[in-house]
Length: 389
Image (cartoon, rainbow, N blue to C red; front, side, top):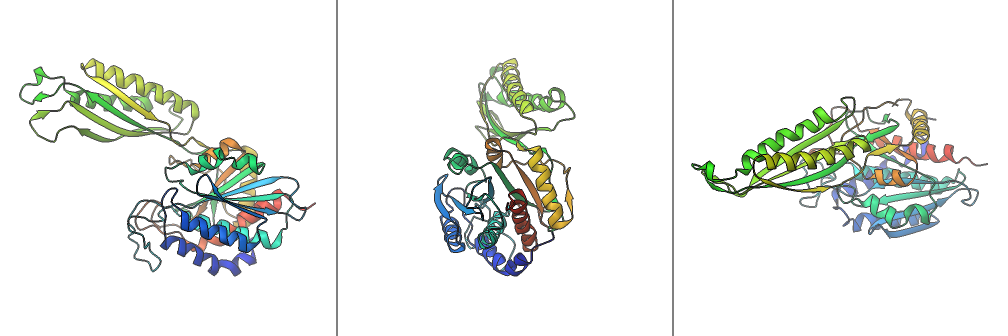
């Protein structure tokens, strides 16, 4: 089935919602305006239940099918939060909030799921129950985990969960997905190399943490190049180097390194942390310095379930006729991964158009032409996964 006529009819209305969200971006868990609008609209649509405050500021809507909600329960998820960035689009609907911007398209995701919720509430052309999930704090706050820990899956007995994310570089309305690892885990490290400072003209009287830090940085590159299977993806990046002085003639007492580790394989993720801890400690010690490592686990690998991925791809094919079923994985991270750890499901990429700015760019804007395809995919998924008996 192609794009549904109802979503063509609703396109202008959904676009208006999206642009309103874009004008009023909110960060992390502080999505009070957005969540309030979402909850009000879900009630207006006639959802059987609307619950606010799941995962602090998340919103959940329950839509029962024609059989009274008996049978399978499917969760559909969208994220609501923006990024702490200054917008540079110059658009009429550009952000009115200084230092905040919808630079990742969560405004589009929220509007698409609202459009699907309106349609599903009107038609009820499915068995079982749909749980529409609007989460806060995807951008670094683990709002998906907060909702899961707040009982999301068990409270409504969700069997499967699905979500989408826009992707610049793919034609608007087309889809891309893959089974297994689609997005990477994202961990962070903070390393303190401690030595003994002194005058730059007398290095022999010091334990130079700069030299030790330089060798640590080089050693860390071997984690990916010599410890990881070359056929698997691993990134270890040192992104910040800072000493406790800015003078040109002082050897500092300490140097701080900060960076990130990305992996598409959980076992590779475990190996990377172990090797980093070992290499940093040993390399610093070789130069007479000490190392302290603060290693923080972030979002896990976004792992699509095989059966649900095949079904999600079939629904994308039905909607647009164009879906890449073996899309290349991306080393960005996504906290929908926590929901996929809790329940089987799939995450799909929705084309945002070619030759458009990438997500997290100050000139990015969600492509409203993709809205009907995204809404239709959610609707097709529900009606085909839970057909009326």
